[in-house]
Length: 72
Picture 1 (cartoon, rainbow, N blue to C red):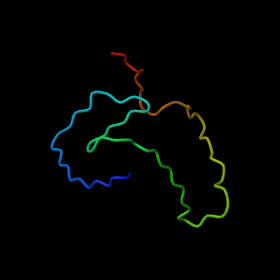
Picture 2 (cartoon, rainbow, N blue to C red; picture 1 turned 135 degrees about the horizontal axis):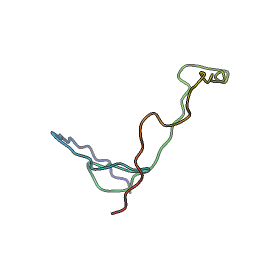
Picture 3 (cartoon, helix red, strand yellow; picture 1 turned 90 degrees about the horizontal axis):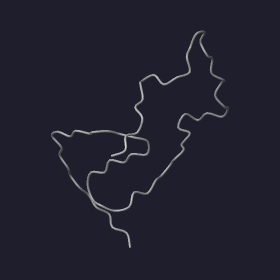
Picture 4 (cartoon, helix red, strand yellow; picture 1 turned 180 degrees about the vertical axis):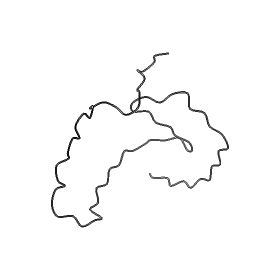
């Protein structure tokens, strides 16, 4: 049986202590989070994109510092 719930939630302030890989923040009804992926070709492209160009001196590293997961 499927239930479809419509909610209106107003949040004035929220503080997130930390986010790690595969984190989920759910606000609203409890239940199952079903992953969904949709692939649309809205630009009408017919060929693959051209290969990227690596600028000289570019470092292949994250642009922002990443923090290791903390176990509580």
